[in-house]
Length: 184
Image (cartoon, one colour):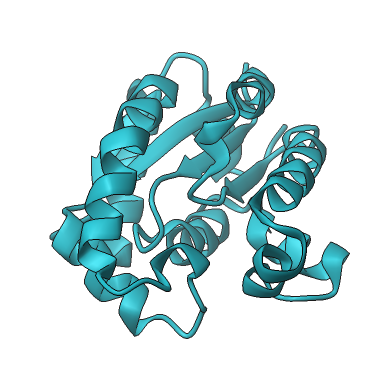
């Protein structure tokens, strides 16, 4: 039986905010991979990209993902590019039900641009085209990795959490009651 829930999806899908709310609702630990990477590197993700490049960031991400997957009763908010390395998903899938938080490209763009966080992959002339291009490649990877898919485009955080809970009840590899009561 899996004891973790891993949230995947593109930047702006709501992984961190949903993860915090879901963890609180289910009495689980919340783990944000991007925050752990920032702590470990002692710099922002944008600074890691600028100084060391994306490959260095992805190596750090894989190491942190493996550590997070070893936890029990955790809601793990994964970075948007976690699916780029299949080994990351293989490791996370062993202990986690993977929930893909999907959203329409225009919604993702609006959320990402309204975020306080600097998004290195959107530091381009046409961020909308960048999102479209990245999603063409990543969407099939998210869908392949996911046990559950939730479209967050028209939902607030409480709505997304509610939909995840509804889907977890149906998932045979995860015992929602055990988590909701704080047992196990």
